[in-house]
Length: 164
Image 1 (spheres, rainbow, N blue to C red):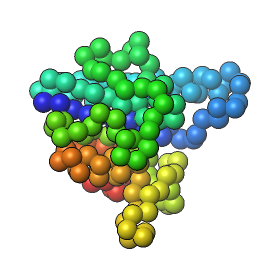
Image 2: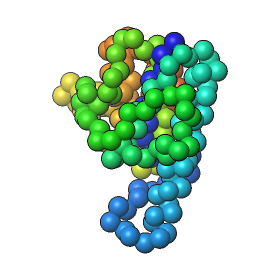
Image 3: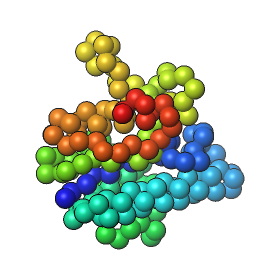
Image 4: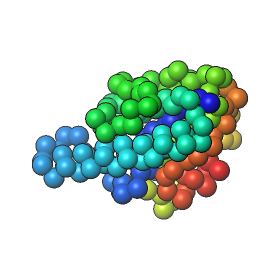
């Protein structure tokens, strides 16, 4: 069984505001490092759960910003990782194809404009605005186009309700 794990950082436990990449303060540095550690821990939990459920292969896509958020030194060595500059559109889920058995979404956030959500942003308007998608629901739609079901999503209650 092959599992594809798509990640973002704004929906991980403990995240409540965007980092400021222009802020060179030690406080901001430590905040960013803490968020990277929390993301890595949540990814490791998903990797472990995937292997415990019978996966033979797990591919993790580090998909927030620069794509260098997951701490490699702390990452479960059984998985493979895609990192570095990420793409958008259909190429956004690099290497995803019909050979995968499931998509797992870790650290998702609600779409832009969602009331009472933690850091809602990104909003795709599909079919002239008849359908609205967040990054998480777009990932699920792309996976679904390959026949790959989305089996798990973590994030706040707004994004989990949106995707479920």
